[in-house]
Amino acid sequence: MDDRALLRLRQAALVLVLGSGLTLAGAFYFEFVLGYAPCKLCLTERLPHYAAIPLGLLGLAAPERATRLLLGLAAAGLLYGAGLSVYHAGAEWAFWPGPSDCGGGTGAAPAAIGDFLNALEKTRVVDCSSAAWRLFGISLAGWNGLVSFVLASVAGTAALRR
Image (tube, rainbow, N blue to C red):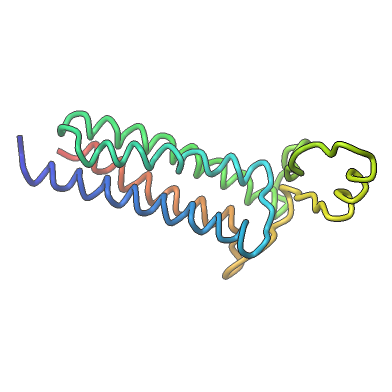
């Protein structure tokens, strides 16, 4: 076993855990602190990060061969997430249509008609084809695509490099 290769794998696993953790923390900050309701695609784009964290944590303790496999799985999932983010950002820029069923969740069903009418006044439906926020012209979906691609590159390169 090559100690330098194992160290490189552990470093990639740590970058994966920290990068996905910070990405999710940012998404939760926008959702719960700033009040930006996520759309269906936004929630789906989080899934690869949810998977990457435990895969990276396992990679911090697993043997070299298992760590390579775990990082490879994380890289594949994050590449899927990056592709989904590119699709989402393209829909926001009207390069192609977004999904027809894309809107934000509204929570539990109201028990009475009065509750329903009150909920209607407060509910903001989120459309996947409109960016709620941009930085340097890039939406949250675009930033997620960039981060997902970088993390997939780190994990994939470490998994394949001998």
